Length: 635
Image 1 (spheres, rainbow, N blue to C red):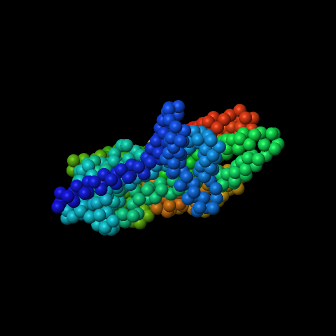
Image 2 (image 1 turned 180 degrees about the vertical axis):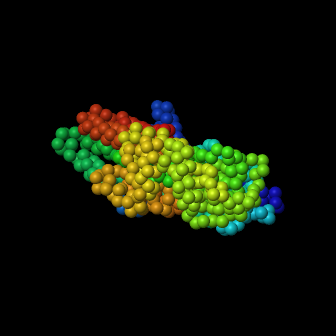
Image 3 (image 1 turned 135 degrees about the horizontal axis):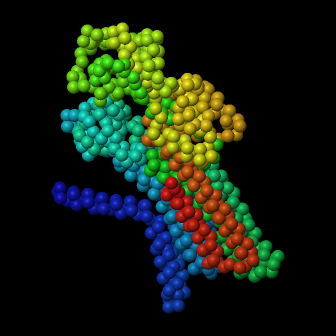
């Protein structure tokens, strides 16, 4: 019995696979079969009866036209409006009704082929989304070895992840060191080192040792699920151009049908055409005036742009935002976490002569290890590689809020903090001896008993990619502006380093909003790039809000575009893709309208016949779809 069940399962899976294959490739297969039947009918036309020849062409009609006919009839029934699909089916039937069976069949074949190409574009994007969804495991292993569905996980649960496994949920490493491949989320191929207390995300790969991870997010709210949601919404959104074309299509189809109805009678009485010529020319008009190429001018290009961005770690929340990026005049940046790393670093230091740097580093590391303040973490990072062999120093630490830390070690009183804590006069004298060139810094002093013996300059440093990204954005004709809550000196220094065109310091959230509103009042299109909760109002006010991927949830939710890897160079890529897409859309629209105009004029002048009209019209549709697919390779 188990063997029978297994065989049944295999057959079922095989049948399901066939159905799945047909669902994906059915249109292209039907178009191919339709074309083969037409080719056979053409080859044997002189060797078979007329009835059999017509039967072959009718089969080509039915096989090639079924999908589009069903789509057209269903959509017309639901919306109560005529559409392009129905227009083409009517044209093919009209051609057949006056004896042009082969031309009608060719029309159906080429129309079904162009439809299959458009479906291929949509399926390609859906397949990429499904591939993305498959990257997240369906199960997770608890610490006791029990394997559970990821939907059962809750914040506070602990799971084990072995080397080489995908991480099933967002969490924090509670035990273990590793490197993690985050390319599925960020598009960045270089693995990232992770250790205890670092965040890890669902869908990424553990490349190092075994980990224990504390879950901190519901399975439905992971970063991975948010990405999937963004991609799904982006595919469903319509750009302004696409919305216009879709509205225009219905009105245009009605105009074509009315014109064709008039054309079936008027030329006979006005120009003395025969009834056969009149009806024939009306059918050709029905074919060549159909806006198939115009309708296909935008969507394939838009979907290709969204897919291109997703592969690079750029998530667009809709086609409207892809289109709008190319129209920007200015880009405003938050400073902390956007242009800078968002964490201070020791950029310079001075230790008074006669002091043992290793011993001082030991003391600093031991004292600052008792604090989680960002400045304390920066001091730890500086001290860690400079500690001597006797690195374990016993200290008793006292916290002085807003000033620093004090401690007792080796019967010496140590103070590590700002100038107020160290004593302003002594601190200033040490800085004078230091003769530091960098002024726009946060200064930390070390006091040993009654003497200030060291000074450290700390600064939130620029991201490595920021300067090049700013320069590239400016080369695209964009004005760069920094809006920051930092003081004037710090803002001026960062703006100078980054090469920013304009900066505004001491900005509250409402100041950023007011600046962006002024730009909009001047009819200037502006994007805002930020990552914090305080940036959310500005992100919502800007024409395009762009969030850094490691930003706050509210920033990610408010933004229209997300840069997953916190890499400003991705913004340059996004704008270039947008410009490429808009250029291709313009090419497609101009080309499709020109072809329609030429074909209509040629039909009135009785220059073209039905086959040429079919090839010209449907050929143009195929060309604009293929042209739209070029955005996939935009860089």
